[in-house]
Amino acid sequence: MLDISGKKTHRSVGGRLTVLIILMIAATGAVMMIVGYSMFRNAVSRHYIDLSETLGGIAAKFVDADSLDTYLETGKADSRYMDTLQELLTIRKEGRVLDLYVFRPTSEGFLYVYDTRPIFAGQIGGFDYYDPNHPDFSAQVQKGGAVDPFIGRTVFGWLITVCTPLYGSDGTFKGYVGVDYPMDIVETERMNYLRNLGLIVLLVTILFAAAYLKILHKTIVEPINKIAAAADSFLVDHKDGESSIRNITINTRDELQSLAESLKSMERKTEEYITSLNLITLKSETDPLTKILNREAFQRQVSVHLLGRIDENQMDAFLMIDVDFFKIVNDKYGHTAGDEVLVAFSNTLKKAMRSSDLLGRQGGDEFVVFCKSVGSLFVAERKAKLIREELKKVVPRGGDKHVTASIGISIAPRNGTQFEELYAAADKALYTAKENGRDGYAVY
Image 1 (tube, rainbow, N blue to C red):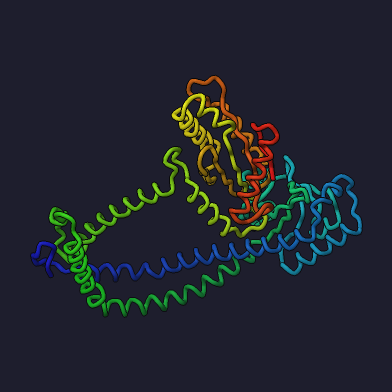
Image 2: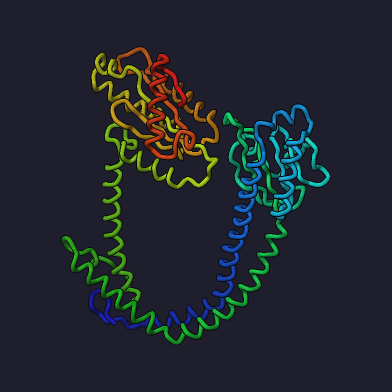
């Protein structure tokens, strides 16, 4: 075989690969089993999490969230309560879950409104303390809103727990529907799969080893030589200036030398192209003054997120922000000072944003913010208040008063599930905020 410079190599990679493949075959079965079992393990857990979310969603349809306050205050069960409990017992039985319950989180534990466990069925006000071994889960529950599924050991054994939030007719958080699945069901399915996987992997490994050793030279060595020749030809035909391939020094003196030399050069070129492409993309999506997303990029990213929404209970917030009396700033202190205010304004907004939030400039003194998964309207309003507080730090050069802003808020999916709908709703809310005297916010 020839290397890059046209000289013959004296060693064959085929012999080395033969030895390596024989050693690797022994480990292939184990690796395949580990990977397969890991994938199936996650798939089974995900299946029961999805099933729990589905059952929780079904149960939530039967629970009147607005009635939870009354039941907890009076501690009395009426006919509607018993009808709802019967529906929950049916769902628990049909879904083969360990427990199905409705509770409200407190600072110390779970306060039950409905509990389908036989010894507690029909009782209101039962209480369980948070498990001290799982403080993160307890902290999430206390905050209200969406909660990550929990898998782990509790005082009731190994469980998969999924909590579905309940919201009242006014949009406020009222409690959760909790679904517990016992892990012994999951582990039984996993072990059955592992046994079957072991038999399949053993057979496949034996067949693979026999076939691979037979066709090693035809499928490995010869293709390597062809790939190296094609890569070298590509560089020669598409070079701009002198090719750097002549300066590479790799002296393995086998087929891999040819492949490595050619691929390194191709990789270098590819990285240059990718870097250039990233710079072009960044410039096309960024507002040149404030260095945040421009109108088109912001709309595109928000639309992509809205299109991919799968949780109907997920709440997103759209904030439209205008600098109050910005024309006066321009007229009084000059356009340079006005630009400085816009830059400082955008930097202030960045500080108030989470890493998942989107920030863009629509043009002029109009900015937009999209907050994903805010959980509740309260969080969106708190974000607006935080922005107003941060703006007190922005003072025009030569001025003595900080700038203020008016903010309009719309909520997805309540006000729409498309960019144009949320934009229009936020714009109307912004108009209301301005009509109310500016330096404030309004919710559509």
